[in-house]
Image (tube, rainbow, N blue to C red; front, top):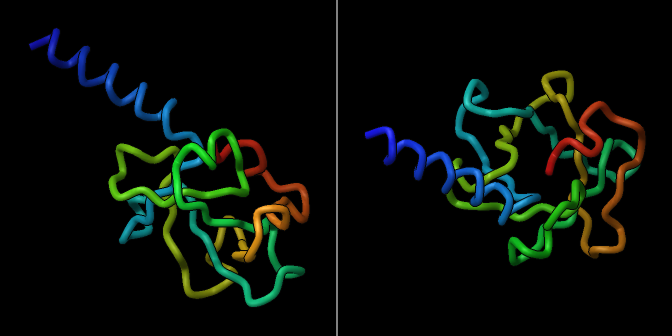
Length: 113
């Protein structure tokens, strides 16, 4: 039993290393690491986010996100909130990779991967 537990922990740690920058969308606020509000304009956001198609593209990047299907694959789980005052982080989804960057200093900078 202990051996099985060790293999499981090893698998989870390797999955986290292999999928740096991966984001999971939690259904409920209490399951999330971070509450996120999506802004309408780039100047309102703490970070401009570009969503990539493959997990290797988000490797070690805070502002490039890959949305994974399961919580155990993610580095950070987020929950979308309806109001700005509920958010830990305000984001704007940009169209191009070169636009992805932090707008202001944030306590979450360099912690999302």
